[in-house]
Length: 412
Image (cartoon, rainbow, N blue to C red):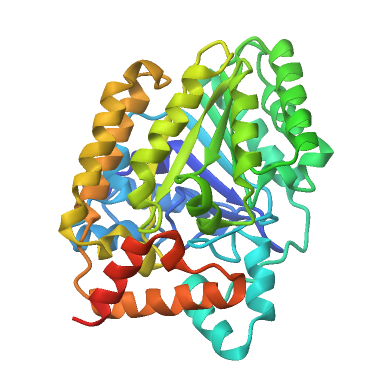
């Protein structure tokens, strides 16, 4: 087997419908997507990877591996995965401006950068944005995307487990969801295959939706699962901190509404858990976050009283990475691992526990690894100052420990 082989490239497909094209990629890390409308483009990447050719589609992993970092490719090759998966980014429409996000995935950030003063705009574009990206959806590509979903259904005879992930932006407030896109995706999958095929729909949401949206989502899920016996849904909430820290990281979040929605989802007959993006602002609150979310799950009235955690690590922008943190805080990983160990009966199943420890091991390799901390932390201070000026929230009041760490690094 070629040393460029990637299991993700064979099993995953990423479709991003953000502007006048549909970006297609073989995994979420690719910074060089192709057009879904370009026949044979994705197949060429797959063939290259199978035959020892380092296609530039996968440049992020090649760079990581050249630097001795365990790449997303290598992690995927070592991790159990579903047989086939499609990630669908409906658009970039969002109600939040997460501090590590960009206009590509948030219409709120797109507007803020567009309206920013010249110097701020230049800084934000350099730090958060690919300035070649036009963050405006000019065409509706849902019909073409649903064709790919139907193709997945047609191929279902060859595989056992299938997964479709709906993302954004915030998919639950996307204009397409109001047109019953959840129902449309499910119907498209089963259009040319048996009703008994296994399918999981994973909805990645920020958990901030108003009551009417949550009502509509729950009703739609219950109606569809009544119709298709092997259809399952997972609500995957993007969150990694509590209270004011969460509201700082995910600007636009109402933490009380998030807690209300989390509890409501838990009270239903589907999986509910978290996709955590560990960053240096959330890092110190991680044990508290894990404990709080587990405690809520235990007290829920749902059929499982369980939750799960998927651990990702923010790599960009670099100044929000845990790579800038000093060794004295590495003990927080041990606290987190102990919480997971002590609460395995509340984690959805063993695979999530295993995935957590794999993700934690990857995060520990990154922790404190920045070799140019002074410059990185100078960017961090400028960014935190910008957020204070424009949002009126001082990082020193949210996370004084981090502020002292960053300030100290700039003076060394």
